[in-house]
Amino acid sequence: MSEKNLLHPRNKHKSRYNLIALSESFPNLKPFIKQNKHGDLSIDFSDPTAVKMLNKALLFKYYNIKEWDIPEGFLCAPIPGRVDYIHYLADLLAENNNEIIPTGTEVSCLDIGVGANCIYPILGHQEYGWSFVGVDIEKKSLSAANHIVNTNNLENHISLRFQENTKDIFRGIIQENDFFDVSICNPPFHASKDLAAAASRRKAKNLQLKNKDILNFGGQQNELWCDGGEIAFLKNMCRQSKHFSKNITWFTTLVSKKENVRPLKVLLKKLEAKSIKVIPMGQGTKISRILAWSYTQNL
Image 1 (cartoon, rainbow, N blue to C red):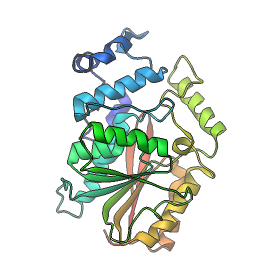
Image 2 (cartoon, rainbow, N blue to C red):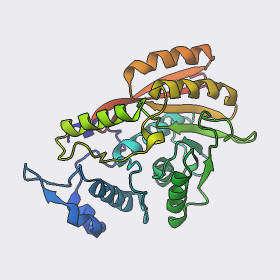
Image 3 (cartoon, rainbow, N blue to C red):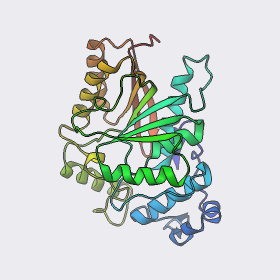
């Protein structure tokens, strides 16, 4: 697909999925592979079960994740876009490391909103060997993520923490002696359930999916929407980041809406961030971007 040309050069998924090869290594995918109207092999992307099975196959074949599952209705994160974020973070960390990507468990990452899928920690560790702390406000998500960690023998590299206060991002999570090289976040984009559903229907129409009322990639409230939407969530994150400037070298987050970048940069300048970067990236069928800021790196 043409949009895959937007993916990071190191992304293993820049070409179309080789579904035959995937099904040979992960046979459970085979029943979901069908010919589409163009005569090409594909899966039904309007079927959440088919989408989840594709994720299982990709994680098994490319990232050595033997066991992976999520509760019904939870976010089934598309692998190509998620691993793209990881690759761009590797480039960011390399800028202050003689252009050499730092690898191994000494590189410590904080994932805000780890979700039931635990996708960023498992991809970050499998690609670069990094260690992770994943945070979530939903105990059911943490339970599912913990199962993924344990069944893949990753408990020495990935730990999970429960955020009790839904208004807090870093407070209550970061301890006095904690240090992270980078924080990661895929914030809730929408301001309400209705807006999230409308966006899903538009996406389904654009992709010509059969069932426009199904969230084919799933998603719970804290994964897809919050009061005030993306901009409110990220302004709160920026303000709280100031208090943990010595605990995290690089704060980063995805920013879905381009119009949100400028007010966030203005806020970060007021907060005296020494370095602010906007890193463009292609995520799925759209252009997205990573906002990164640091209070200790003047780059």
